[in-house]
Length: 273
View: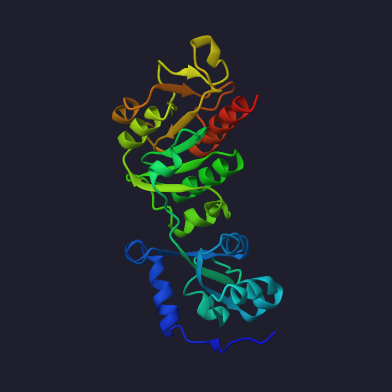
């Protein structure tokens, strides 16, 4: 396998330009972000037109010759770099030898909340990148139509968010930078019920929804709030109903990712019955 010249200096213009994407400001200015690791890069390459440039060590190129073949076939710029230089782009302690520069994947809200949408996942004021990435992965696994991160939520292209999606970021449409009011209004206009995952006194029981008239087989937009304080009063007022995950043991509560998984899958199961 013929390889290009090895980039061995972190002062290389290509390395310095790519490294800027570790900062949110530069991601927003360029409309690009970094993807690290074989699994995520594989999914990015499978998503036509997503990868702009590839950085890979010689060792990883030997282990993953399909990456080299893919970028060559698609005429994507690719570079062999030393392991030391790759650390300028990688954020994990032990880099896995490959980083891709990708185009931002944002889509318009109206393109995903339409009359065909069955299940939409909305994150409002979710600030932890690991939680956001995990929920995107959950939504993908459950067959949701899209994930919406409101303008008050974490940057979806944060390196930890991207890594936590395990490649699902390239499978499911993601909307960013919108307000919850806009999302709820459009969802309702398109015939979806808007449910808040929140354990308040008026909340329906997720496991006994029919007792209180909640139909989990209906088309639904689930809204999940902040990790620390949950749903704000103003956000709750924008939703049609609240739904609580029952706690049968002694745990005080569930973490956000777990609660989201239970709710999303309960809707997915009911919609497929």
